[in-house]
Structures are given as structure tokens and as C-alpha cells.
Image 1 (cartoon, rainbow, N blue to C red):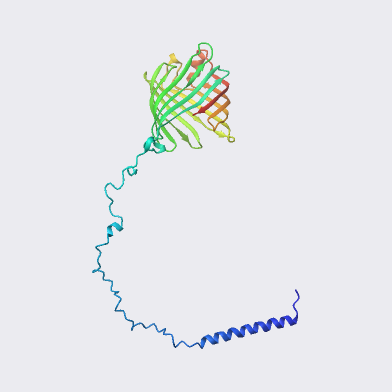
Image 2 (spheres, rainbow, N blue to C red):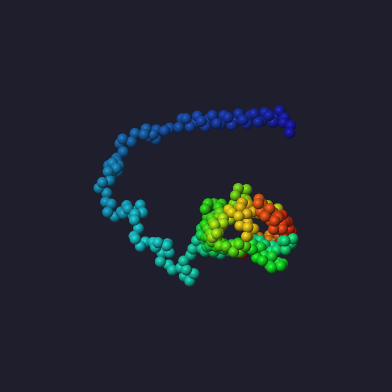
Length: 308
């Protein structure tokens, strides 16, 4: 936009007029007469006879004021019932309970699968009843042959379960082993090791003095919301030789398996396929060779795991 000399002269004249008006207003306010306003601040002649500012309240009548009640005081003994119901009944459903205090139950079948090369069914299941802090657990694991004499080998236990810390739980109870037809006292610890490795260690003291130790570890490698790869390994050790039951002192056997599972129905049902491998350890390898038994074996597996 082009501004001419005429426009510049007009703008300058307008600014000069506004500046002159401002100076005139300031001069007018300075000559204002304040004689009618007493701003001396001297209030010595004010009559304060009607105001008692001494602060002495000793003669005040406090008889109608309950200062203890204003601060809360002590309630009557029957002001509130111990369960905070205020005398109102709970109705037909009874007294409510906190979720952690309510006894519940559950069943978990971690393995129900078939080994094709071994021609046997493997199983591992747990049932429990109780609360988050105290439970009774019934657990069984083993295998069932599907040919010849259809022999079933299982190790079952009934134990008391209790949390030991945030990630670890303890178990103690009794057990029975059908493979050597012997009862035992059992104690164990189950939980989650660093890197989310599910770990369990259980010791069994049999009536004949034999001590058995089972160690297991499992990890869930989640590919997405449904597909999961689960590698697991288990070790078994004994404290002394028992040739009648094919047991040698030390570590006897290692079992490994890798499963590919697909979780369905809110992860309550998960069919799987996988590969398993078993091998004898230590002196157990030589004993199995003497008895013409396999030392190492592998097999394709298929099965399902579920809980409710």
C-alpha cells in the first residue's frame, strides 16, 4: 500500500492532538481540590467506648456451648455395630465376604496327550479347594500304556498349599507312587523364577527310606494372542539304588518336550502338537542296557490342556 505525503501529514497532526489532550488531563487532576478529604490517618478522636477489644473473654458464658462435641468427642458405646451393619440384617444371602477370603475351587489339566512312538498316554492334572492364602491340592501325573498289559504308572499327592512370597508357594503333604507301590511324605516349592520361568521342585521321602527329587521348568513363548510355544524340561534323582524298581543313585532321567499350542475359549482350552525326548542319566544308562531297555527315546505328541 502506497502512503502519500498528505496522509503522513494528517497522521502526524492526529498524534500531536492526542498527546496535547493527555497533558491537559494530567494537569487538571493535579490541581484537584482535596480539602474536603481528610486523609491524615489520625483516628485518635474516634470514640471506641462501645468496642471492647481487650481480648479478655473470661466473663463470657460458655454454658450453652459443648466444645468437646464440636471436636468430635467420644461416641456412645452402641453408636456403631462392630460389623458396620448398623443393625440392618444381611437378608437371604447372608453376610458378604471379601473375594480373597471366599473359598473357591479349580481343576487344571496341564497335559493330556498321546506319544505316538511310545504308544502311551501322558497325563498331569491338579485340583484345589480353598482361598488365596490356604488351599488343599490334589495332584497326579504319570503315563498309561495303550498296548500289552496297559500298565499305569502314576505319582499322586494330597498336599496343603500356602504362599511363601510374591512369586513362590509352598506345598507339604502325602503321596503314593504306583510304580514302586510305596507311600511317601512330600514337600515342595512352586513358583515363577526370573524371566517368567515356571519352576517346581518336589521331594518325596518314601517309607523304605528312599528319597526322590523332581525338578521341572517351563516357559511360555507367546507368538500372538492364541499361538504359544512351550518348551519344558524335567529331571528325576534318587538317594540310593533300588534295582528291583530300576532305580540308581543320582540323577536317573531327563524328559524334555516342545509344544505348539493354540489357546481357544478364553484360553481355557489349548490343543497342542509337539516333540518329546527322554534319556537316562548316570548309572541308569548302564542298568537299562543290561535289561535290554531303551536308553534314549523320542516321539511325536499331540494332546490338549485345559482348566475350569
